[in-house]
Amino acid sequence: MVFMDIHLEDDLAFRIFERTRLQAPVIFTTAFDEYMIQAFKVNSIDYLLKPINYDELVQALEKYKSLKKQFAQPNLDVLMQLIGQKEPPYKSRFMVTVGTKIRSIETGEIAYFYSEEKMTFLVTKEGQHLPIDFSLDKLTSLLDPTDFFRISRQFLVSFQSVQAAHVYFKGKLKLDVLPKSKLEVLVSSDRVTDFKEWLGR
Image 1 (cartoon, rainbow, N blue to C red):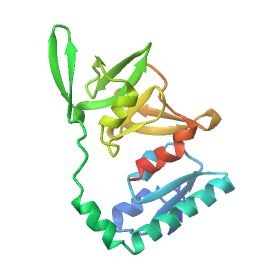
Image 2 (cartoon, rainbow, N blue to C red):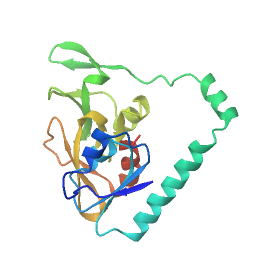
Image 3 (cartoon, rainbow, N blue to C red):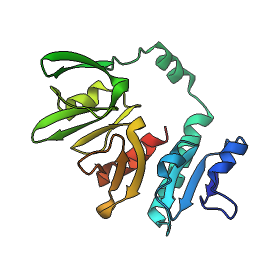
């Protein structure tokens, strides 16, 4: 395992991953929050902001131990059970009404979902905001959790839409998403840890 700062004397640490195959898991330790998304796109298992909080450091080390134990000696019985299981039937498209037309939207075209004034909206990567007849609770069960994450009671985002994450008050994270949202896109404090793990899958 490697503890790695991001701002090095000669360049950013991400250059290391471009020039060599670093297979060891990495815990980034930095004073900058704007590289969080980039960090989880390499083999990072956690992202600790300086000054490092002791409890967060312990949690990161426990996560490393858990992952090491999980992958060191695979359970063949469990593997055989997983091989025999079918993929869950996640939705691949949604039907929405656009004016007088009914349109089919592929999930790959969707940037995020949000709720406002008791209505749920689908936002495409092209920036269209379309009402949809599903609650966020229902959508969470219909969508592949590898691609979509429920960050709060108001937002369900796709991995591709998340551009950056910033530390916010009360333990929350504030996200930059594409297309840009008119509302603040916040990760609830109780979902921050799960959100970081989701980014690093």
